Length: 243
Image (tube, rainbow, N blue to C red; front, side, top):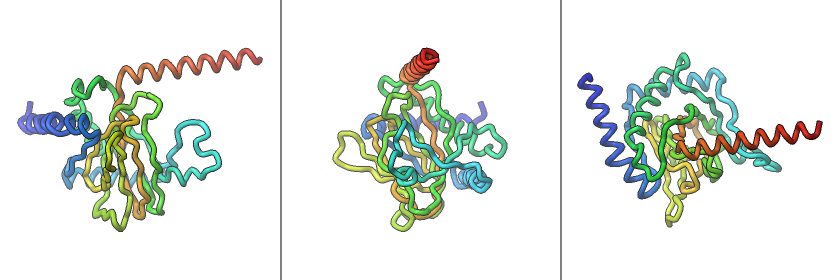
């Protein structure tokens, strides 16, 4: 193994074992600054801006039936998003980011309570356009869909929360405080995806970029797929019975 690669893997393992795992188990979240460094971080930012400028990003959707009934969707969630795997043309730097996060999370496996992580989602590239929109208080995984750890990488140079807003506010379960995380350039954030961490994106008054991935608990994910399969089969049976 090349010396540089060995040093990188050692640093990632130390970060995972010494900081990420203890912080998740104790307070439910953790963030690290200067994750990629200025040069690579700028490459990622440039690619995200290109996705945005090319019109690939579409309005983020609300989960669950009837969530927006009688309420403007934009009043709940105002971001524009695109899903990427990292292998697409023009996403090479994003792929570097995802590879490093995957390596980092691999060192956490087996140390996050009962959760066993074997897969993750595609990356959600998101932009709040700076028109005062945000995302109201919510839980990423309220219904046991398998999402275990939420990981967000921020891309906002010279961000000033007092002027630009856009803070991610976490409401840790059972705690007497909230945690405000500014979406600063090259900051990487981890938190539990389930009901332990309700959170909100406060209104943003400048263009705000982030990349989010979710890591799945394998058992919960498998059970969620079984439920979906059973529900789909039941719906098909009902449809056939009405023919």
